[in-house]
Length: 175
Ligand SMILES: [Zn+2]
Image (cartoon, rainbow, N blue to C red):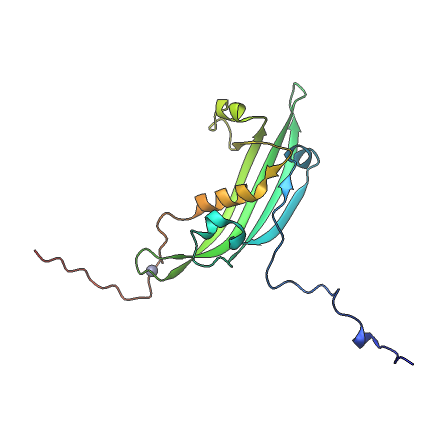
């Protein structure tokens, strides 16, 4: 006869334990449906999943938190225009250009995009026309590439500590 199992013996495999490493892939979006329905999505991704970005930071296990929201507007002529808003937050270590020690770079990206139908249309549209940049929509939009591009662009050109912990060694120029 099998012993009666108390609640403390219940299988724990299905308990909602947060994973040590977020592994959720950034989804491919159908931007037309995503913006028409006003959908949103969010998740976390290790920098290692974004290879071009991983080359620019010291720790590929650093985690970025991303969120994207869609909305659409119907214009006077009945055309629907889709908009995407992207947030990326996180902290990635880079090398300080002054002392060469790691420096934590805080990222807080908030970008808005207006979707257009083609590259040709994107080139025709004046980016200064409104606050949004134009982005070519797609049924298979690579959101991971957008997160990666925006994060790379947000990284400082010359990362440095506000005040380096290493004492500055004066450079003596002799002639
Ligand atoms: Zn430094």
